Length: 210
Image 1 (tube, rainbow, N blue to C red):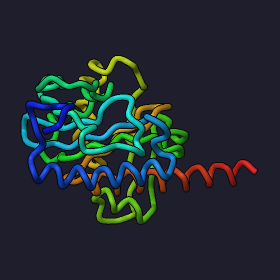
Image 2 (image 1 turned 180 degrees about the vertical axis):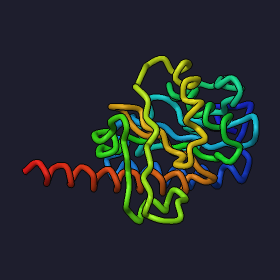
Image 3 (image 1 turned 90 degrees about the vertical axis):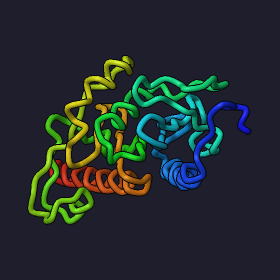
């Protein structure tokens, strides 16, 4: 039994999914998307419970025991924990409350996405848009973005209007991107697609200014 959360244990299915999430966290770290202790990850176990990565943990060294049991409704630990959950736990829980389909939330610091975020951030005319469920590249989308704040409780409340957006991504300006999906892999696909599109936009702007 884990010493970090001795009274609540992840289900066998959740343990399997956590191992996959750890692989994606290491991949993200290798891409410099989660340098040091930056970023956070979570998985939903059921309607009432999710598991959120602990605060201050190096994202290239996460283990299954670094995920803490959190009540989705109040964004608080459901059992005594020896570690503190991520400071952005409230936002993870807000996403789970808004979308029954959401089973995983990934928060990373993809550099081109962060650099490109302006209001509005528009993306168009690229096959990668199909990753977000659009049937054609011949469309234009606006990426939801919000000012960053250290008031996580209010941030968790203010994001509600953006959480049913088809993209299933949300950018905090000057900070990073959240993505969610039915699996951790699905959330990662969205992060990768958004970073690719923002990289292209960055290159276009750079070449046009020469």
